[in-house]
Length: 96
Picture 1: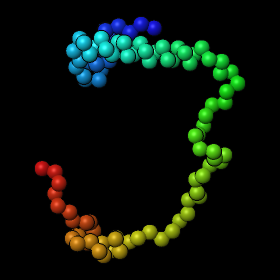
Picture 2: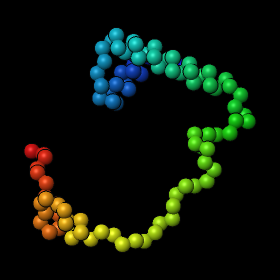
Picture 3: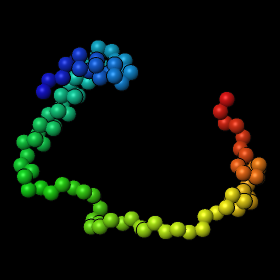
Picture 4: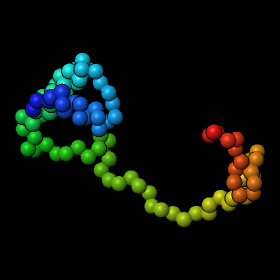
């Protein structure tokens, strides 16, 4: 598949990026190289290759069961807070 400078210009416009003509020419070459790699993969016989589900050798779900437990109360959460108003932590303003 051939990549044209117009394709690069369209991708740049959709991405809100600006490229010089030299950069566009470089991207054309790089995208074509990437597509060549995909074409090489297409030529492989992968008929009997199982899809990789995980790089880890785990055979089953490792999630734990949800368990109800006593949550910390608002009062307990605020016990060590340097500043609070009884309901929320008070912190210095960080946005103007």
